[in-house]
Length: 374
Length: 221
Image (cartoon, rainbow over the protein chains, first blue to last red):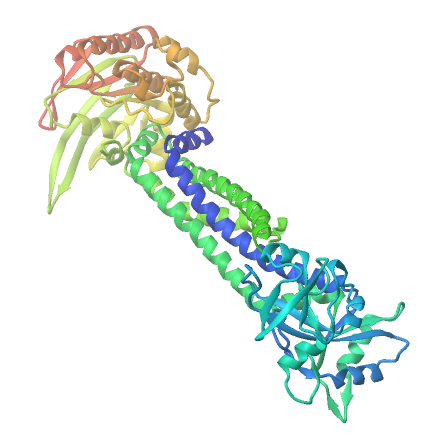
């Protein structure tokens, strides 16, 4: 059976290759998009964890990928007061914003406004240049962003209608890629007397139960009113971010359906053409005594081989993309074996499903009509 | 007991709103080990008769017995089983699978029958003088060689009945002679029962018995 299938596929090499490529595109689409989602969240989570912070306190409905989040800076003092000092090691107020373009990089970057004195508390380490001056429009960028954007020490970045001078390059992996002085960013974003922060980064003292601290922060009331603080432990951050990024997850699920449909249609069209083209061969097999099942199996085996090859090529393309995309951009792609398995099942299922109708068509052909087919 | 028997076999085709009779009461018997030939002009119903005898089509009425079993009432699956276990076909247009080699074309017949694919394949190809061309695809073989592959495929399962539909119709005289000699050898040396259909009287002369068809009936035996 497999000899007949492989011989038939080999006989029409170009068409077989196109079919394999069609399925591969579907599989790669699924794996790369899902991989980009997971890779992005993985990378953000990993950078958030690398700061050594135990709890990030957000306000109300924060957005993981989002820009300006605003809560009164005085909430920080309330937290300090409510959480006993034997549990709290440090609390760093952060102003978060987004930078639309830097050098040749047009992908949005999160920017953190942090006081010079607090940079050490977030494990920000310099690999070149110096730390910024709290009173100047100065900026730190990480080495990966510097490499991709072509921006280096001494260059100026136009951001929020100000010229920010890059004075230092920091190691990748701690917090965000772009740091600016807290005061300067605050001044530009929040004009007026009131003081705000977007996030409070909390480190607990050794031995303190971070989970309990987070629970206590969530319950904090001030002047008889709940503060609506949203503490996220770094230990459970991945799951929290995944929950926040659910819309993207939903998108990935739709992509799964698209991939399934692509496999289905590619195989349906290919095998439909195959059956029409091999009508005579089907007649020959019937004259030799082949059962309907034998003929249907021959068609499905052929489609299975195409699907297996398509899934293999698609997975290969995805791993290649997972290497290429981070090399040429700031995006990360994480291809997990679990999703390769899901893509394989989707590809194979879609393919086999697509072969059923042509297989039934082939199996039901009248042998004499098939034998005289021109 | 005859290996093949038909009783009052009729076949009509629907053309538009009316039925066009093609076979009008065929009664015949073929004995085991016989080499019979059915001759007749084009359109007299020879090929239709062969298709009915081979279980490729169903009769409108009448009965066909093969090796003692009535095949007219069998299901498609049962007819397929009869074809793979008791019959071999040789067609005018050879009908080889173009994507398989000469050997592959024979092995597929073995596989369909559920037999080990290497069981006697090489021997039968050598018997047909194709030992050197086992790996060749049909388009790499001459027409005579293609027909010999088709015969090898038909006999590899040792069928009770070999049905041949104009087997020399596409061949030149040299290849026709060789194929007919092969049929004669199979019949005489191996006792193969053969029913051949042809409009070529020279080809018919090789058979031990000739039945003439005319207008959907056996006119002469």
